[in-house]
Length: 227
Ligand SMILES: Nc1ncnc2c1ncn2[C@@H]1O[C@H](COP(=O)(O)OP(=O)(O)O)[C@@H](O)[C@H]1O
Ligand SMILES: [Mg+2]
Image (cartoon, rainbow, N blue to C red; front, side, top):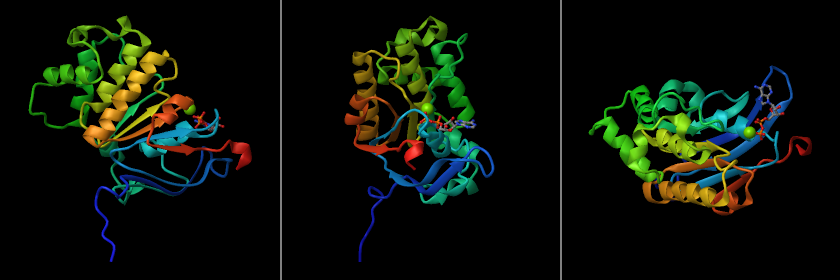
């Protein structure tokens, strides 16, 4: 008899997943089966147009597969409350950050805490400052407006916001795309700490060989014409 512990069971599974944007249209993703685990940093690589962002949108519950299933803790995401999944279980870091530029750093983070409907055992502002420390930003940044921050600093705030309600899975679309090498390495160290010390499942879409090399596992999406 084999015993399977929670440690070895994947938190997310793509089970023969295909996806087309239009009914009967060309398949952007074709028969993908892959597992993602907590405590690991996973990279998704592949050329532009290969379907990386589409794969993240299925993982983050923004769309349902045309064929196959996405399973979260063994359950079909298509049959669950996807709003609940998106506001509690998964933190998404978009390519364009999607922060509110006129609001402060802390306000952006606290909005996401409020949207989760979760109860917090400390004042949200204090938690926001702790999150800043986790993404290597000084506490003073809490009251700074987003529009005053650099691209790398906004990326850190976007990560802090995604972490604010304690999700089990973090997904990020090209999080180091426009950053210098030093910042890229630091952002990767934040993701590795999250996975290895806080048991989060981190999934990163990237073009960067350095980012892929710093991950625990790499899934390569082949170019569309080769499928
Ligand atoms: N909203 C959409 N409607 C129709 N086609 C789309 C849409 N978004 C992406 N596509 C197409 O799907 C394919 C994969 O896109 P995408 O997932 O963005 O790839 P990647 O992130 O790897 O560059 C591309 O051919 C793209 O043109
Ligand atoms: Mg993309």
